[in-house]
Length: 140
Image 1 (cartoon, rainbow, N blue to C red):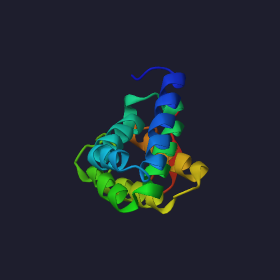
Image 2: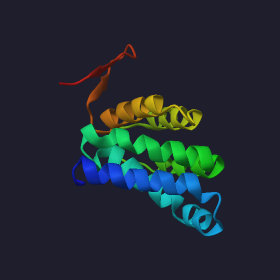
Image 3: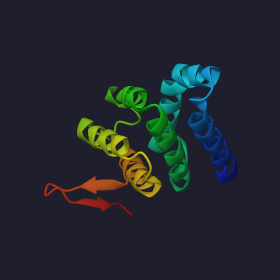
Image 4: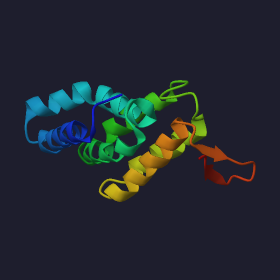
């Protein structure tokens, strides 16, 4: 488990601010281009279960900044979801594709990105059950 909310919020704020400012500095741009896939991978792992569920909303800032400043690269970095059982074995390819499309569509609406992250995180943790009718239900 990652540490409590305070350090997580400060780290995500640093990464998202660094990303937003990086296009004006070649060294910062190269850093994001070199480490962007790793950042996306770690954030997806946190959403998938490494971080407590109550703390995953803060990762929306990182996704929004990457999507706004590096849209083509971010779309490529999210393809890491095509790896089987990543971030967990509880989500199928259809869930992953829907999550990718939903996140890539939003470049500024933090609330919607947080909603997509919450739903995907719940599926990764086995907290959403899908019935044969296609209706999803949270498991208590």
